[in-house]
Image (cartoon, rainbow, N blue to C red; front, side, top):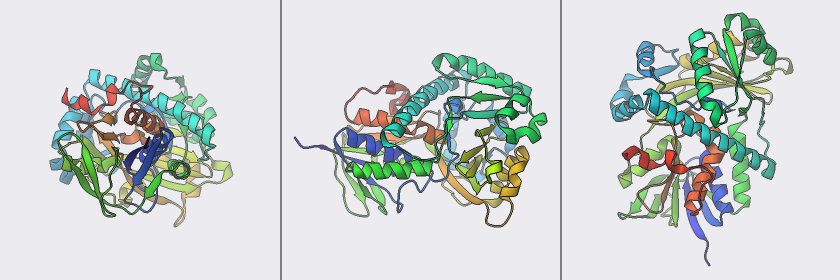
Length: 424
């Protein structure tokens, strides 16, 4: 009996891990990637956090008022560029509709369920493959300067505890004891929450390691290969058009992040996924100034993550189409916010060339959860739209989609992540 064939489009975190799981299910797999290697786009320098605790989508109730308040502020956590507005009107309307309390809570529950499953899956991968990517299991520490914000977070925690979310509320003194680098600014805090099940690690190193394991398992990688579209009839895809010639397979999996809607456009398959530009900065730290636990600044919407002898600062959301140019004013503002919170890091960040600036595009669905699994085409599948949680949701999403392609029942009910939800 001939083995079934599958083509995965995209060699980032999601695509590479999906390819590995498909190979474990006896598929002959080819991964097509436009860049020269794995993980060179959004997976390259993300925030480094594995955070079921951050399951609540960005379109929380009240997001419209906050977005209006932030208009024109270059240092705001969320920035909408005027030139991006015409291209995101439909997506934006659905984004706001999904910010109502009930759908927002439903989306949060769905993301949390997938995130917890994903971290269990990733722990299994770590053990099975002996992966090394500076994986820490110290949780995350979310800090608050505002009484109301902490109260709302505590309320959400209680709603999510039955689903497996663990959290403990700390006063500023206890927060500084958990992360000593906070000692200088603890008196500015109102409180904090420690999420012990969260983790952290270098997403790029994970992707590179998974690519090597996938290749050893027989997965073929075609780098420097552009995709121009699909050929299909009304029911199924027959051909993937690429710069290296036509590619034929039994199954096609789109895992191209923010670029997924561009790929499915030729199939008249509109994906409600929009790119949200994020910034990160990375620099080396001395042994005396290394973080013990990743820190999440709730008000500023930035994260500060230890990655071995480096620290990664990431944050902001900028809606500006597919622009990936580094805006140094915005990037530097993110760095300054982090250094105000953890001033001891300033010495390591000082000096020309010490800090590496980077941007990436988070593929945001209009309602929060990713889009996983089947499409109206019988042999076309999706694994995209993970927003700011691609790293967190990677392993679980990859295994779920591989199960669906292989005709197996996934461990998590796929309905909340189905493409069909947008037509209900």
